[in-house]
Image: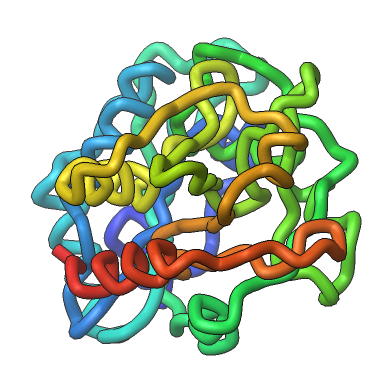
Amino acid sequence: MILVNGQSVDVLPVDDRGLQYGDGLFETLRIQGGRVCHWPLHLERLQEGCQRLGIVMPQRALLEAEASQVAAHYPDGVLKLVVTRGSGPRGYRPPDTPSPTRILIGRQTPASRLCWSRTGVQVRICQMRLSTNPVLAGIKHLNRLEQVLARSEWAEDDQEGLMLDGDNHVVEGTMTNLFLLQGGRLFTPLLDRCGIAGITRRRIMALAQRRGMACIQSRITLDDLYRADGLFLCNTLIGIWPVRLLEGRQRPVPDEVHQLHQQLVDDQG
């Protein structure tokens, strides 16, 4: 099911700035039992993105009504919510009176990805590097060419690839955030220069705090990955994926990783 500005259509004006320039934002949300999970957290991040880009945030009640309409068709599925600046004349300058476009897309949850939470995943290091831009860091804007090029580096042997910045610090996966376990503490890359501040990343940091486990945001190197007691990846759809192999090297999976995953499953707010 696809809704564009509330209408059940699958077409978009060719002058929409999301299509022309990637001028917009998106959220990927889990639907479970006909309910969109963690809706307030996703709206909060969307609101922050709109503020940073100067896009008028659509009315929350309108977005919620349309999201509920999609969720009714996919009681256990995926909702992608896109907000663009809307149509405009030729040129980069934003229109004086923009009318944002709302796009909601519903899909079934990919079943194969769920089993990797139990079995663990095989991960590679991508050659493609992330550029740094503090203004865009953290938000989920539509410009994803770096991730597209990184994901084109491999076929199906690996489930995910880790991306570094220009200073060779590990930032995130192509579609996931990264955590390290070391000495009973959690570490996750600092996202002040690039990367997406994921909703599940945020939830894991909160879970760690409730467990009395320190969670530190810092610059992470490749050496840190190989010294860690364990690694795992996360996003809204997969929950947690333990890293079983990194560049062909076996990695341990501590019990804490499975415990955190179960807590995430139990807390689908």
